Length: 177
View 1 (cartoon, helix red, strand yellow):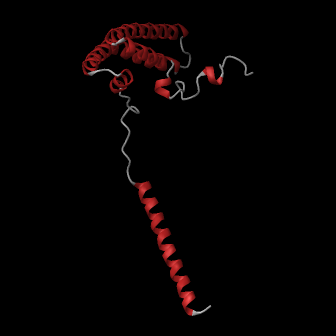
View 2 (cartoon, one colour):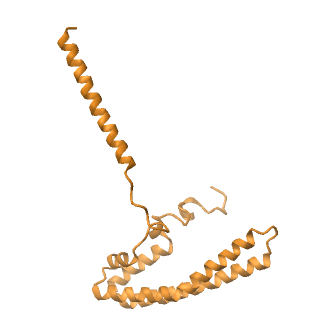
View 3 (tube, one colour):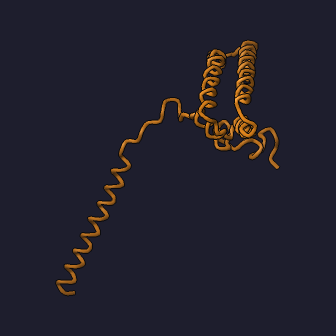
């Protein structure tokens, strides 16, 4: 090997090492840059824009929908707060050495009463929204509400705990086929 080819080899190796080091430093720097924090309570879902887009609501329909939505949440907020309080009581009861089954059943029944009240209010709310829609929008609203009822909307086709719905993965109370 003569002097020029060895010098060219060393120079080429040096340039390659500098490029690799630069790429590595860039990757490390990008990994350590701070990312925006998610909002408290998980991701936020903007129902206003979702319904306006899905139903193709015009400006006046969107304003009316927002008013209906705010009224609905003012009506159901006490029920939601009651359920939260009852669930705390249920946790306290379940952590006792000997939980009282009568107390537990009473709390569970009360939670059910509040859930039923929320469902009744939701039916009224959706009926009011239906009166706001055109016939074409009513068909789309039906699809959206059916998807929401089966939680496809919020979980991308997954169940409450992030698993596949029981119709897909099988009922846990049935033996596998």
